[in-house]
Amino acid sequence: MNSSNSTNSDLSVDVVIPTFNREEALERCLSALRSQSIPPASIIVIDDSEEDLGPAVSRNKGWRKGSAPIVAFTDDDCVPRADWIENILLRFENDSVDAIEGSVTIEIDGKLSDMDPHPRDRWNRFKTANMAYRRGVLEDLGGFDERYYIHREDTDLAWRAIRSGYDVRWAPDCIVHHPDRAGMRRMVPRSEILLYRCDKKKYAEVASGMISFESMRDGQLKEVWKALKSYNDDFVSPLSGVESIALWSKSSVMAIFRKIGIR
Image 1: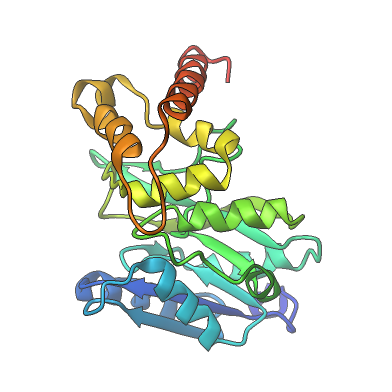
Image 2: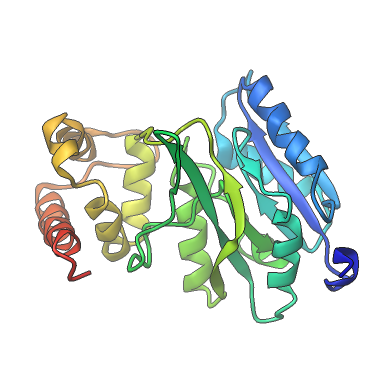
């Protein structure tokens, strides 16, 4: 079957890629996009290497430059599978779908694995390494919240979309490979506190995903706990003692339930 005839011809996809000092990785990503079974309407790269404003700012600049009805987001160090655009278009042929979250594969010790969300997680997910939205959703929500820096702006956008009644679907057939950053963790206190303030109940699931024997052993969990109680800037204030106790108590219970297979 000719793939160009298998999707709605009225649909097309702009791809937006923020980049920061990764020329070789970016070229690898662009090469994969040039080899798609159905080409994107445009590939919009926003270089933040000099200003370092963060991916939320770059992604907003990117999607606003395009005009296609679907906007797909990925990272400069990702490699979309050859049928990525084709499968995105197929998903959006369903008029009730407003956004999709795709699968992200990684390689660990020579074996293919994934960075996909826990099967029972409803909120600790929505990475823009592989997300696509209808343009109208982005316009309605105002895009990404630019107060976020480095991370969590993608989860925030999806939460706001769901809260506004938009239908965000899981699309495991829309795949990008993330060859460079398996296991890498980054944490910016402002972004964590912003997401907590966005929805405390949903954030408890996010926090539970940080709790593990490894994070307790290497001090990462303690670092996050202290940062959320002490960080302060023009955008956020730290969690109070009561908020901190409530958050980590609930998150610890959720982490235990996950460990023993209850959730």
